Image (cartoon, rainbow, N blue to C red; front, side, top):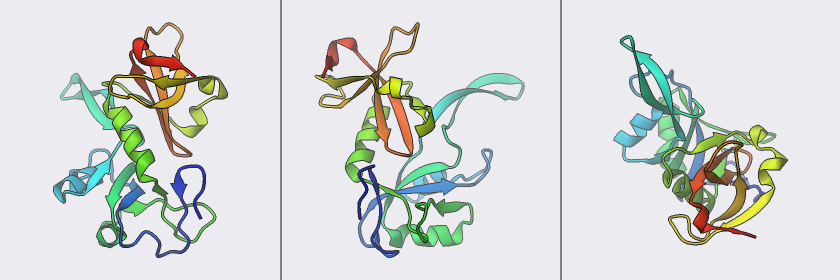
Length: 191
């Protein structure tokens, strides 16, 4: 069964084996861990995505900008269950996120939606992330389509922040995460 939310619901517990897909995972390692999951996956050449933001942190008495995960334990991993399962068994802090009201069915995101989200987030220097609870009905007010530029063909809602000169497109992974990415005004067409 597949929900209309963008999250795939496997028909049985063995669904997802044999083909690559985006799994929603948890990295429970501490923020100062020597080898967080994203570094371990990078070393193993496993495709992954972690929503990152810049924060000011104090190191050696100096305040410096530092790139950190937006949600500390959230990571998306693109591979097969056969590749990921041994890592999950071996590394206690690396876990699947499971669907609610199911028995150990891992959450997955449709390839098309995940690629769309990653492309949008990587198209801007400073994406603003939102949890599903933070996305208000007012944020979904004005439907737009992007004509031209790096996000050509994207449709979504226009997010405007009081006092800001920047226009932003809201891109979502339903029930998980949303990001507002900067868009040049000349590319925006109201729908």
